[in-house]
Image (tube, rainbow over all chains, first blue to last red):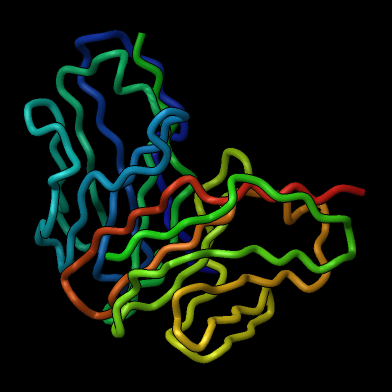
Length: 113
Length: 112
């Protein structure tokens, strides 16, 4: 049963620290999405990649967030420096080529103190 | 991508059919209707999608009106495990328009 995996599942850090979240998309999927979910804002799209190339990162705060796909099996989302308002659940999702059905990972729960 | 409107919450008795409506009056001809659900503290889960014909799979049925301005997700025999937030989104398939606006969804509570 192929699944999207995310690490870490939970992260507590102090303001100003760097945070790196990792996602392993389903093998063969060529589109990867990063979402952030909070009670106030709901599920927001931060960025997405197709064939490892960034297509849209307009939802991401540019000064502190960065997203990359070093290879087809790994996507990363970094926050540097982190702030308390970044506290949220971050979801990664992947989709196969030509299909828009997204398969979500379990999320990374981030708490910035 | 077109926006959707859903009721904020609904209740359903266990074993009965749950009918969740979604309005997408500005949908374009090449936009599909997708349904996802999110059970508490888990990632959203794909349920079903369709363009204009009604669709059915092992999880649910999707009824799309002839003018495609609204749709209904049907869970034929709701169980307590179907309690979740249900999201209706519309999006073009196979393009670079990757944004998915999930909105607030409908919180379905299945009661014993």
